[in-house]
Image (cartoon, helix red, strand yellow):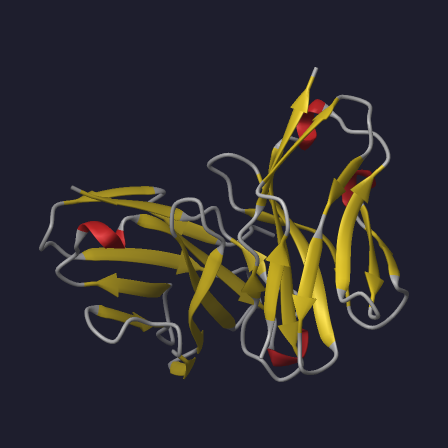
Amino acid sequence: NAGVMQNPRHLVRRRGQEARLRCSPMKGHSHVYWYRQLPEEGLKFMVYLQKENIIDESGMPKERFSAEFPKEGPSILRIQQVVRGDSAAYFCASSPGLARLDEQFFGPGTRLTVL
Amino acid sequence: AQSVTQLDSHVSVSEGTPVLLRCNYSSSYSPSLFWYVQHPNKGLQLLLKYTSAATLVKGINGFEAEFKKSETSFHLTKPSAHMSDAAEYFCVVSEAGANNLFFGTGTRLTVIP
């Protein structure tokens, strides 16, 4: 059973470009969470999604950031018009369901560098 | 409201000596508490979790943590450090009904040969 997969592992973008980060949850998991880790900080919650639904996006910046988890395919975190402050590691986690909230399995992360 | 405070940003121990990583939490309701480890350029791995069962929780790789409600603490310990324990450790809290985990700022553990 493969773990949570994220790609790319490393992403370099210039200011103003778009970044797309992908997350494939563990098999059988229908809940996905995105976290951002700025340098020298802990992870901060961004958004929680189920298939085709955004459940909680209280941690998402108001502009330029969006997330989706379509019926088919991976979850996507999209950052438009990236700025240097977006440079961070972005982690995805998945869980089997709301009752198993305490069991979030993390992917290896995508490290975004904005030049 | 929930929050986590990791009291030490860096801890350095000699190989074979005990490890103590401190964590205090704040939570309005009965929390679930976790310790995660992050090795360089890797994802996070769950070490152990407390979810209102036994207050002394045993995890992987010889780590354990004790939930002390009176002290609002959940310190992580290991009797004897190994070189492979060098990593970043995060204390994490989650409340019933919450949709996400709240992370501390992390403690970087260095193990000296």
